[in-house]
Image 1 (tube, rainbow, N blue to C red):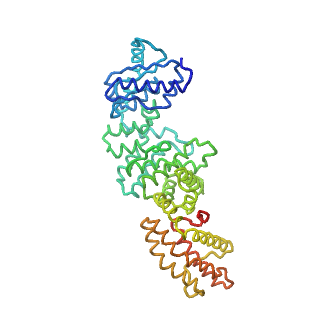
Image 2 (image 1 turned 180 degrees about the horizontal axis):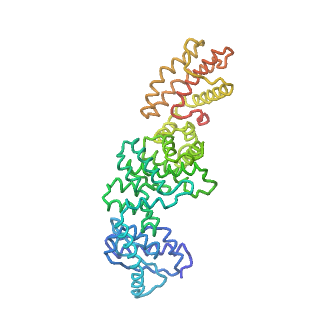
Image 3 (image 1 turned 90 degrees about the vertical axis):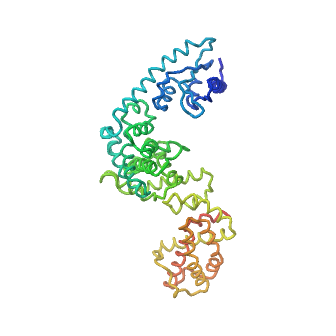
Amino acid sequence: MIASFAARRALIAERLKQAAVQVGDGAHPVEDDALLDEVTALVENPAIYVAEFEPEFLSVPQECLILTMKQNQKYFPLFDAHGKLLNRFLIVSNMQLADPSNIVAGNQRVVRPRLSDARFFFEQDRKHGLASRVGKLDSVVYHNRLGSVGDRVRRLTRLTTAIAARLGADRQLAEQAARLCKADLVTDMVGEFPELQGTMGRYYALHEGASEAVADAIEQHYRPRFAGDVLPHGNIASAVALSDKLDALVGFFGIGQTPTGDKDPFGLRRAALGVLRILMEVPLPLDLADLVKDAEDGFDAGVLRHGFVPTLLDFMFERLRNQLREAGNSPAAVDAVLSLRPTRLDWVPAKLTAVPEFVSLAEASALAAANKRIVNILRKAEEKGEAPQGEPDVVLLQEPAERTLFQQVNEIAPLIRSLVAAEDYTGALRQLASLRDAVDSFFDSVMVMADEPLTRANRLRLLSQLAGLMNCVADISRLAVEK
């Protein structure tokens, strides 16, 4: 008996590897920490034995066989050097025997009906296919206020097609993938093993002659399933994955079912992070606000309450803020970029790279402080009902310092806008540095809030124009304490 759990676990892991080596052909056992922990808790004096099953079972998708062996029998499947399932598996027994043939034979006898069930489910499912099952989704409740899974699939199909159009992807393939993406939920195999949803849909779609793009989208539309998981590949799969998550977010926020504390029964935090990662990391040239609006339009009138979208966007930006900070980005840089609420998330990484480079410039501290002052002046003016409207009038510029600032702003603005349009955010912020002397001189010699109304309004318009230019990449007033 080995009393220490850690020592017992380590011994089992080592003996599993040794047994796999003895099988040969580069064999290695499945890596599954949860299974290893469970088996370790079940035995006190572990012994590892090799067993096998009939090769004809390998005609069933290996994901089904793996799950059957792991979940039902606590066996460790074996794979060859290329990751293909072998018709052998490892048993962790609680009995050390010189002749374990009875144990091996008994376990082989037990696993056979399990594998036979998996083969039966697979063969029966393929007889009926996916397309014929779509109608059955109308009888499966998604949520009592959001309709059936069939209703949801119709929304997903509409939204996916719209996203595909924005991406220039094949709309017909996108429509087919979205229409079939949930059909495997009513198959026998997924009914037995819910973990295989999407995976089995891919197999069945290919069996019916669907294209690889459609089959892959069916499997990948659940991605990312967890933190660090791989993202969907290709525009069709990304479109279905975004639709799946956006429909859930808009639907549940729209009926007031939002996460509270550590409670998130509908997985909305995971869905939000999935949307953010797909848009930002794939990356995709899509506007988050537009996507949310597209998803909202898919629901029948009266289903969603009015005014929930700002709350949803706040929720998503808070998830993004945490994600970017956890990735090692400067909190000040993250705040500077996200305070502008950029809905084109594919631009965010480049902006985050540009901000620290700007901070390293000698002019950055002064410009950040000046921008903070500008923001405060404009906010107070707005509170007084004097929010600047339009462009500054050159005729009303009186002081040399304000005329100089006006001239430099108008000279540099086209270049900065061009750099931003080219996604050269570092270059755009570097160009801002050339304004430092003019900005310092302006604040040293010009009274913004002059008594004369036209002069005051014109100076506020000049500052508003300057603020728009200075904050074209990030709110640099948030960087005033960085230097």
